[in-house]
Amino acid sequence: MASSSLLLMSLFLLLVVPSSVLSATLRSDIQALESIIRSIDPSSISPSSYLSTWDFSEDPCEGSGTFLGVMCSFTLENTTSRVTEIDLDDDGYDGFLSEAIGNLTELTVLSLNNNRFRGPIPETVFQLRKLTKLSLSGNFFTGDITPGITKLKELKTIDLSKNSIAGEIPPRISGLRSLTHLILSNNHIDGRIPALNGLWKLQVLELGNNHLFGMLPKLPTSLRTLSLCYNSLAGRISPLHRLKHLVSLDVSQNRFSGTIGHEILTFPEISRINVSFNQFISIEVIQVIGMETHLRILDAEGNHLQGPLPLNLATYGNLKDINLRSNMFSGDIPRIYGKRLENSWRSLYLENNYLTGTLPVEFQRISKQIRGSLSNNCLQCPKNVTICQGVQKPKSQCTNAMQEEGLK
Ligand SMILES: *[C@@H]1O[C@H](CO)[C@@H](O)[C@H](O)[C@H]1NC(C)=O
Ligand SMILES: *[C@@H]1O[C@H](CO)[C@@H](O)[C@H](O)[C@H]1NC(C)=O
Ligand SMILES: *[C@@H]1O[C@H](CO)[C@@H](O)[C@H](O)[C@H]1NC(C)=O
Ligand SMILES: *[C@@H]1O[C@H](CO)[C@@H](O)[C@H](O)[C@H]1NC(C)=O
Image 1: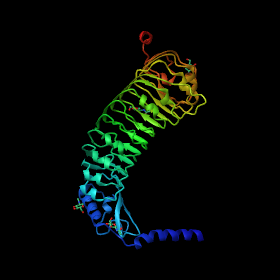
Image 2: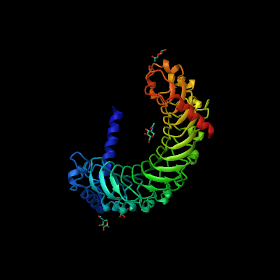
Image 3: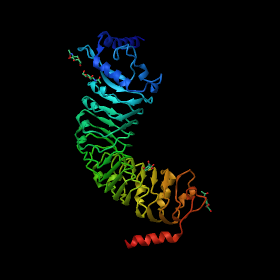
Image 4: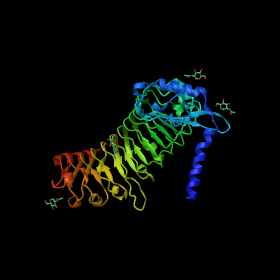
């Protein structure tokens, strides 16, 4: 009892002390906030939204619980408060981002995700030298990422995903040494990816769903998540072999070719690999007995992978979901695949290859529902085995494919 009232009292003190300093917000910060709300269509501001609480008859930083989405700095030695964060809700605010934003020079966070802001990102944003987070995802921003962004040396997070941003990634972005997250996916960005190895703290790089082309550049070895899906990137993925901290890799839907190296499958923390819909011709699956691996999901659908199915996949202790659909694998389904399906694997897609022979007996014994498909091979696939549904190719198609491969 005593200790809880003590706790209450200290909470009380914490709440009371700052307002007893009686500071007021810097005039030009208030004007900037007024300008921001004026640039938004009032009919898009619903009564339950953050912006509907912005009541300028009160002080933005000192008011009693108004100005949701705004954070201020309160310093004991300075009686002037400054706006330090704008983090709006996703209410569907429809309008432009006012150039006055550039006057909030103490701003560290600008987050306007999932609204209907349109037009270019005002150049004045790049005056906000203290910004650590710029998050404008899910709006209708247009225009290029101008080199001005490279002035914001404190940035840790840039998230401009799901907009209509075009142009190239400015090469000097690599000078933003504090960046940990660079997320530009789902835009119209084109050109080559510049060398980004200067971003030595970068953990998350997401550039998927753009119009990027060319070969992989140098990338920082600190990366944990890399997504480059749905672009027109080409060449080998061997530059990725150095990214030993990767947890999730998605290079699907590009034009990469060559080999998917064993380095990638055995990164100590890799859990998810998606290399689907490229032009890879081989995948190196080495035996990992006695080695701890975290690979759970391997999706290599839609490549030109050939030869027998990789036996060593069965040695990856945490593997659950395997998709090797629409490749050129030939030969039998290894017995060990049946064993893994019985105990650990959850899904196995082998549809549309050149596999032959009968199924391992385990496939007929499996009682649990496994997801997967084996159709469009040349297998003898009993119809009472669920994943055998669908047609098989005539056997000659598979033997021809194997002969052609042998000739290469
Ligand atoms: C208080 O902050 C204002 C606005 O940032 C600044 O102009 C002023 O010089 C500061 N005063 C002191 C005493 O630090
Ligand atoms: C920004 O601040 C400057 C200097 O205080 C002022 O002249 C200008 O009008 C402000 N801009 C906006 C858009 O409020
Ligand atoms: C891999 O990428 C493809 C294409 O981008 C996508 O359709 C598929 O769902 C992804 N696979 C997994 C397991 O996430
Ligand atoms: C399918 O039928 C075969 C005999 O035709 C039988 O041995 C097997 O147990 C059946 N499998 C399932 C899953 O019903």
